[in-house]
Amino acid sequence: MPQIDIDHNDDYGGFGGGGTVPGGKYVAQIIASEDRENSPTANDPNGQHLLLEFEILEGEYAGRSVYTRLNRVNKNPEAVRIAKAELSAICRAAKLTPSDTIDLHQVPMVIDVECVPRKNDPNKKSNNIIGYYSKEEAGETPQATPGDRPWDR
Image (cartoon, rainbow, N blue to C red; front, side):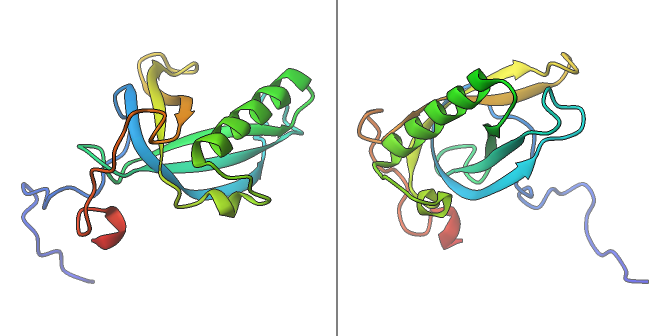
């Protein structure tokens, strides 16, 4: 068996962590997008959603991920309309008219995040993205410099 040779009391600078981030505005970019089937326990178990993973690029929470799910196929037309509106806001924040979600990857924008109790367990928190802005719209200027960006590490 492989031996473990570490000091268990040292966090070695952390491993990226997990969980939620505090509510606020963050410079972030989409790093993954995937169409998924809804879970059997979803409001529409026969539906599909687009899962987008945003990576925070700057500040104390740089490297952390925040997710959003956009209903692409759902028995509730209002859920689909809201998803289209949210995807449209993401495209405007990216200043792009993409034909594929891959075109939205690695495009910095500002996301407005809220931290709320989970519906299924109010003692735990989850993040929701409630707004998308171009960096200019949000009044943000790039703060990361080469070597500070996650992809330069």
